Length: 74
Image (cartoon, rainbow, N blue to C red):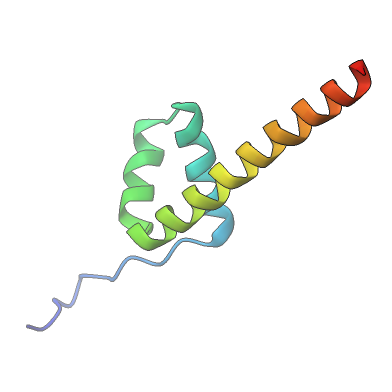
């Protein structure tokens, strides 16, 4: 099938836009307009990879925080 003359392909989101969308999704705070624009630009693979990276950073920061607090108490 061919694309219509007025139809444009959506541009791909930058890594910063993906990180921002995943961060706000972790917090559960999203504006409807931003959600709709992200849905048009983000690819599922981008979101999955950014989510895994974000979760790993979150878990590692918690582990380091606990080690720091326990180390100071001893």
